[in-house]
Image (cartoon, rainbow, N blue to C red):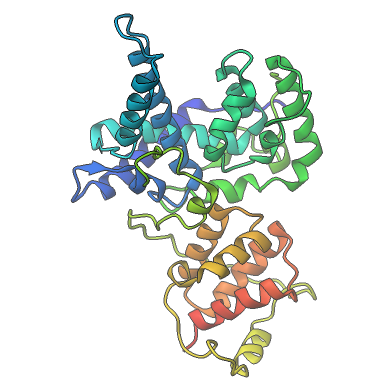
Length: 364
């Protein structure tokens, strides 16, 4: 069955999303900085696609300067001075609302395309790379790919790999077939947008009978002053990116009739019995919102062990649980969403520690 992409829906959605985010952020601010953008929304991929676009504009400015025929930009002293100047400039990102909103709209569109059709998205990235410099392009942009990155990261510095763009595109498609069962759920990825505005996947795909597996299937078409802001966007910095400055109110998690529990589900009474009896240091006492209470080592462990290494999914899960009204609602959400979609083992140590925090979050 052929999927019809509703580009008009995506265009309207991206516009509404960006308008909401900008209205909230620029209420009492005139400009947004680079570090503000990194933690702007709950969707890490959207944030980093904005940064990626700014990086591309930054590079164009640099090339424009170097193309001036009246000065010797190959001179080492000129090169060093120009590099330092551009790096300082990159750390002074300062964008007004009117200029920022179109950047955010484009970032939202690209994020949706990546979530729903990662093969086509990354193949289009290959088309953007300069001829014979595909590896260099991918390596330079690797830090901006937060969703389905395993489709393309294996190509970077691949020894003996062909240099033609068509070879890279075929490799991406083949790799998708090998790892598609390990990719993050498209629904979970798009759910990270929901703190601002819910995304209707059916309206976008225009195919009521299409399964999620078909939705993600590829289409037939094949601050040190010496470094720039973009170079400093390393993985560890991303892991502990500042919380979004846009204040959002997550939609309450709807309670639905609960079916009889299976042996693989988590029982509320067992959670209460398990943790009410604990007396080890740090267990007792009520904690604040989960999204604000995780220690660095806990966030690292939960991201790695429970959320497939995806900080987006962890952040959204914490906010969704914070929106629950009770421990019963929170456990129901975990049973209905995270256990089946992420394959959690209810009796594992990471799940046990995660549940201990959820229990304390709703302790009377």
